[in-house]
Length: 447
Image (cartoon, rainbow, N blue to C red; front, side, top):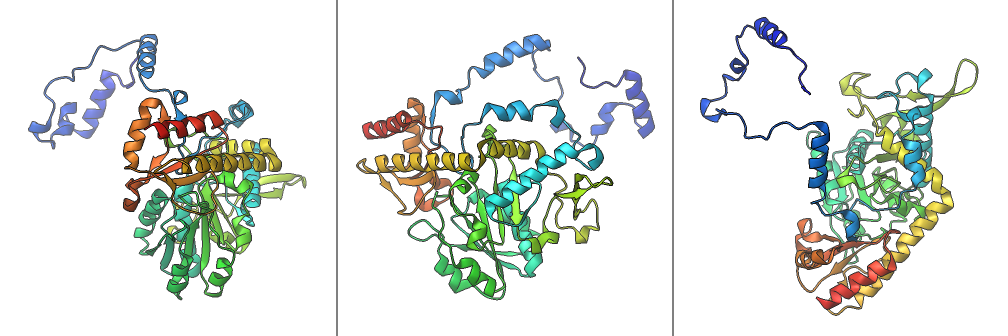
């Protein structure tokens, strides 16, 4: 089957229209030495059924994820996904157009997004939330840009305990805006050094950025920080990479956060090699007009019946570019819907129960690993479902030794933190059984 539908006559007509005789003339600016002089050595084309057989054969050569015991986290979390999610998510009613610009025919999609916004607002303790962002990293970057618009300031203090890749995205987004990002060091207990924040707070600081639980799994303790920042006219931005933690931790809004962003992948969305995911963005109502992306509002129609519509279109496709809050002109509709169904399925108590199970299993694994000679838990602090383990040799070496045993024992931290070459970041969720955790402990003891 041809992938290019143009006939030879079509090609001749197009070439004549642009004034050349053959397709090769299109590439005359490419030096002869760089051009391919003979066809690629590719096998003959296969039929669809033949190609399916070949691809299935190739797929079986790859290691299957279920064959391995996994203790991976670092911003992408393996959680159990109830069958109900896909059953509802893949229904034809949700296969709508790309974007719900016409509310008259998009009420179902708009209502689902509105429910997502409402649930995120309750979880984060904030007053409003948008329809979702691309992922947690871009949500954090947009939060920093928004804080710059709100405060008019150019300096931002960002915790080094926040996810390294989130921080990289923030630096990329803010480079053109000429914002100055200053790194907050890590305290001895693995939390953000709030004394550094106090020492560096001045009238130029637009926002302080924390992540909780942070990249090391440590739950940040910042009960009075928001109040202190408010007196300085500085906003507090809190990122949440593991959304399930909100099932048992106090909402950031109750700690004084002004903007809460994060990654919703943990709510029923598979790891999927890193995406697509869904970011969330919540803030205080007084910043309503500075929120990036799209928002769905509840109103009434001409018959005074409840209705939903997109509201406050502050994207550059609707208004003058210089007045736009961002160029985010869409939302992760399908993933946001999956997260909404997950939260609705589990409910308030269900989220609390699953979150508690994560914390309990992580603490069991941490306590058992700490008993091994030569191994130590690096940070003595409250954790959720991740923690850092110091090893007697480089973490990469430990991972290589465990791989043949079909154990993926966390993430080596040296790639982001050079001083932690011997440190592993391990995660335990509700999907990890006690037998799996004991197997990791016993295998490490036998190395």
